[in-house]
Length: 406
Ligand code: SAH
Ligand code: SF4
Image (cartoon, rainbow, N blue to C red; front, top):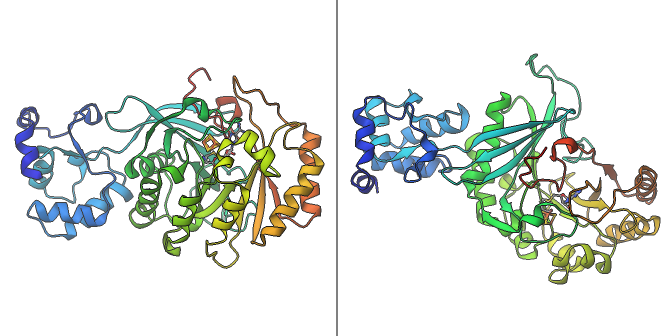
């Protein structure tokens, strides 16, 4: 493969001859280059062996890309210069997705447009300092407040959440969600999913293993309709970047075959699971989430029961409150019955619907939200209200649609 790449593109020779391999190459502008970012430790080791190097050079490369967050091959000085030059000559570049636009909310939330490789379109990623209380809900493993001697005074956050996209757009067509309006444009690769995270870690100067950062796969797209790339990203983030899967939550609209595969994942690689329930019964759910015709509430619950939970782990049910549609007191009692009947350790995350242009629902009244929360809690269901973050920049749940008008 390496040799093929050498002969394939003579223009690369010119760049090399210029004496500054990769230095000012607009790497991503060249769709012919091969991307290192996205390859796991094994693949990087194999690449090194193929280049006539010892396999442990793969580890150095992984360290450089995923821990040191190098984005330029020519700067990876742990590798001998001739090797770096050979890799460039052979058509390789780091190729990590890049943040190309930033929207800042008054509440500290940042929404990023992230560009992957040579692709023209961008994906959306959100940084929420202090989280939105939806990562763990009960605070048990979201990290809670307080600095805990973390010792990074320049940071004005003690924990944070990164919301990651898994697809450009989404095919699922939930009636209340702005992302649905895009339809599915394309799947993201594992590197493109993990790359959003590493780009944000780099921007925010996050120290992995020290800072309390949670990931939620709740951005654009349905992760379980892009399963292999999603889990590939999780493997990269756990094994190469060093993040814990217990600080990751994946949300699905209820793609049963995906949940069944997820149930088979080894616990050391499995994020926590959130299900977008969003309705008290099949009738309402089908109305707002047409996917419910294919996999109804009972089918989803049955698949969820296959997931072997860790001690103290709970399944999260997300519930979007739509005024007059899902936010009535009777609905709350129905949800409580549903969750109890299911018999799993569970909690409910309530999300007041975030508005979007062209969507004909209304935000719930604050009184209705509070009454709903109290009813569920009164029925003994652990219930948390997600704080809306970054609504002013279209960064809140369900608002991601590459809106530039913010
Ligand atoms: N596709 C996955 C993950 C992304 S959506 C899923 O649906 O689970 C993440 C969460 O945002 C889901 O729980 C979804 O129900 C919720 N959501 C979508 N649109 C919303 C909106 N306009 N306001 C509030 N929550 C919304
Ligand atoms: Fe897709 Fe999730 Fe939006 Fe439904 S709520 S359309 S599954 S992103």
